[in-house]
Image 1 (tube, rainbow, N blue to C red):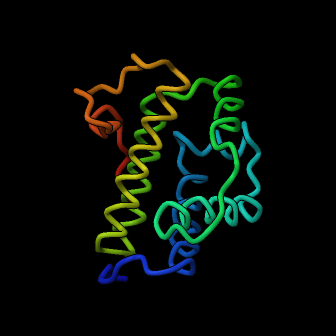
Image 2: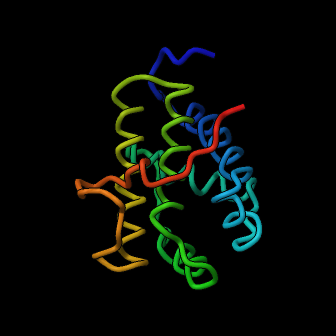
Length: 149
């Protein structure tokens, strides 16, 4: 499938989020945080995270949940690092780029970077090493990337 259009509605988000979380759950670096530590039920998670992204991109959904608390609980069980958040960003970018091109797709990627960095800094402290020079981005160069099959 060639990405040719922007993210236009909730249906697009639902497809994107299913694609992303399918990859994230299967990923050897971050998958265990979802499957083993948090025990995330994908079918229950998708509508909630869809509300988050719909609010972020379209301002049409209510999202009043505390996004930090579940990450703090996971972090207390097994520390989340810049490499984990960087891998999340990498998979998020690949998922968005595989389906969409345009201003909302760009905003989704930038928002993902901001969220990842904000969570990392709240969990590990404001001086958390991101392996880079700052600028609101968890650099992917800090990661050991696996090759796509």
